Image (cartoon, rainbow, N blue to C red; front, side):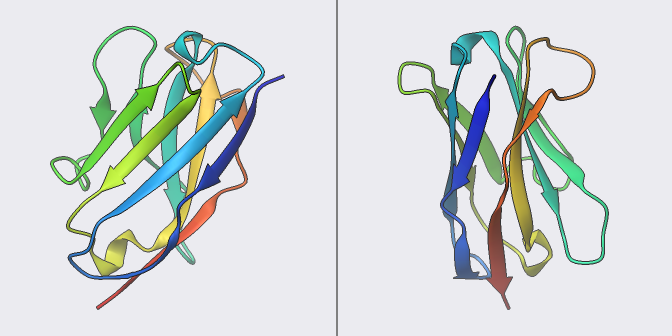
Length: 118
């Protein structure tokens, strides 16, 4: 059973940077696809980006060039570096994992709240 715990959320101002962490346990991180999702108040959850087991990292258009996903497989950590934050980035951010590079996610964290003030 894979467990995921997000951390690093908080209140920041527009233009600031923030780094979220996702700590994984229960399976070797290099064998997991890790995706970041977010859910803004009153909106549906949406993907932010995906770090695949094989292949390049994908970002949704609204964050491309501002957000970067990286992973430290030895430390079992995945990071979401968020730069040039905007008020519309305000959301609960979730990390999720899958044992394959395609299809739905098998495991979810509980999320961490990011609030960007204008």
